[in-house]
Length: 250
Image (cartoon, rainbow, N blue to C red; front, side, top):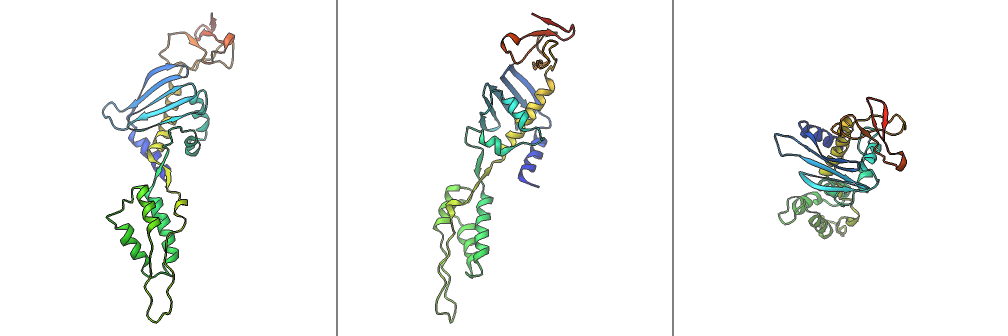
């Protein structure tokens, strides 16, 4: 199971009892809040204005910009039934979609040690002592791991009877290591946004205009009883209608 699958399952589990509250709903100006009435954990809010969507809640906030109606962007990008984290990260303007991942650092170290330890007896033990078990370096800090990886050097001892000794070992291309990946809260936010749009869409009116087949009412069921209004509002094409009477109201 990938980390992405794990986050999808975690989102479903942690938000199973969440309820949606439509705080504001006026065209592309929306404010939705999702929370468990019995708990303050994992609550979140989604707000949109033309060209922008912001996710905020029980963690960091993320702002996305790509389309005039951001809900339409979410609908298109989740047609396959899954989130497209790479695409969404490109549109995230708060630059915090990815974060340092200790596991990635440990993978780079392990790979280079595994490749070199047959030529450098004692290398693995020295790396574990000087880096893995170090009380000086914080391996959960990107700054610290870059420092320790660039400063680390292993000098093998001269084997009995040998005339020369192999040169020292150092980690290669440290500043090319890709130590960042999507942080779990960003992936959580992507699932939350996708789920929020689906739940919002499930509550809208959806009545079709009898005069314009491509016009439909996207206002929530709480709008004025019996009166629908085209969401597009395109000049002379804008209209309101009574879905029960099938007549256009001017």
